[in-house]
Each structure stands twice: as structure tokens, then as C-alpha cells.
Image (tube, rainbow, N blue to C red; front, top):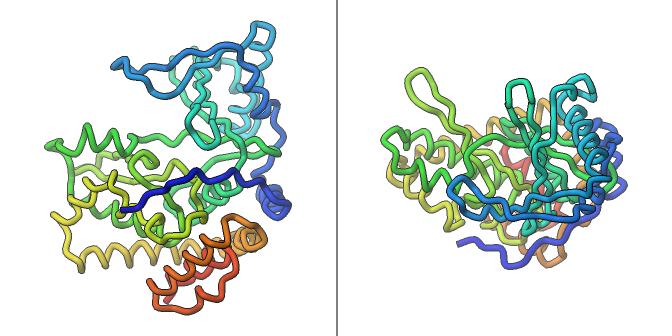
Length: 339
């Protein structure tokens, strides 16, 4: 089984990555930075509807700071969602600011409410980490999902990804009579393949969501990553394969029950074909991203050595052995979809 024993260190944004972010409009001026939210002076544990601790804390700011903080957060939301059109702020208010104290980047989660209809949305403010930004950008370019985020210096703003967390889905939906096991098994195989090809690690059930969409006859599922901190860091290939995390065993059991080996191979080939199409359609941008990655130090020498040896054995291809860094390993992995 896959397991990560140590937290990955936060990796600073290099000048090469910064240049990429500016070129593709991911870097923008913001009215607040992450450190501004650290000026809270009180907090309480946030409980869920069943009165269970969520491991988030709701934070409160001094009266003298609150108006400035809330106004800045609404402007950030307008930048994220409406390309900076401040007219969307007229009916919005900041309902809650939560802090996740156990996360790698200790993110703040902002709850924004429309006072006209009580509709609400979330976004996140985090310490910028190069691994996570590479992961977000690769998800945007190579997966079926679009990702909206912006960066300024050491502050990262991310939109909320809607869906049911994988661990909750296991508890509440796995035994449901409405569960379409075949479609879910197919989606997990394709998700597993996406993560492995683009080297996104640590995809256990806490780190992805299930997007459930009713169809005219059945329901369909989309599994989406929500944690990108382990992009191209770990050394063992199993860390990049969700099938090896014990938390994901219920998905594996459904796959074993409903699929043959040939069916699984078909779905893997389908996903690799789709990744290949996306590589071709965005080859200039992905090329620029990979060039930045190849100039960055995203992991340890020991992890690089272990991973390139693992992948060389997996694919029976010595190209991996010539790689000097994680960017080169990822580029070689992506090219495998055309083989």
C-alpha cells in the first residue's frame, strides 16, 4: 500500500515559474495577501451539522481590521470570478473565514454569500507553493477539468471545486441502490491513469471529490483531484497511483467485481488517448510549463533517482534513466501516451 511518511516542504516560486504565470495571466495584483489574514485575534472550532469537529477553525478579526479585510476579500472574489468587475460586489457579503490548521499550506476558506437569494460560494487563500501551482496548471491543461486560480508573490487564490469528498462518498453512497458500479469503476480507472501519467501523488479518498451528474437514464461520475501539493515530489511510483492507497479500497473492490483485465486496459488506453489529444492541442503552453519545471528543483535527489528507476522498469524504457530532474521525468512520462 502507498503511504507518505513525511510532509513535503513548501517550495518557493522560481523566476522561471513566475515568468510563466505572468505570460498566461495567472499572476495578478491583489488587495490582500495571505499574511494579512494571519492578523485574526480570535477563533472557534467549526462543527458540522452533526456537531462533529471539522478540523477547521472560524477566525475573527479586530473591529478596526474587519471592514478592510472583508472589502479586500470581496474584491478578490470579483477578480477570481468576474475578471475584476467590482459591480458583482454590490450584493455580496463575507459570511465566514475559516482556517485549516492541519493542512500543509494552512489555507483560509472564505464563504461568500449573495444577500438577495442567500446563494453562497467559497474560495481559498493559501501560501503559494510551486509544486501545487504546477499541479493546478497540469490539471487545467491535461484533465477534463478547468481550474481557476491566481497568484501574487507568495499568495495563492483558488476557486472551490464542487463535489462530495471521496471519504464521505464511501460512507454515504457506496451501499446506495442508485450506485452505478460500472460507471464508477470506469471513472476510477481513468482517474488512476490521469494521476499516474502526469505524476500527481497522494490521491487517497480525502484528496479527491466525486462529482455526481444525473443522466437521462443513469448517473455519471467524475473524480476530481482537490489537493495538488504532491505534484512530482515523491520517489515511489505507487504514490502516483490511487489504486495503491488503502483508503481507496472500496473503489478497487467495485472495479474487481465489475471489470475484466481487458476492460480495464481499454479504459486506460482511452484516457491516455485523451491526454495525448490535450497535449497536442496545448503543446506550446505545456512546453513552456515543462521548460520551467525542468529548471526548478521540485524534489530531492534520492526521490528523483528512485522514481526514474521505477518508471524505467514499469515502461521498460531507458529514457527515464537519462532524466536529471522531476521536470524531465514528467516530460518523458507524458510522451509515453504516444507510444
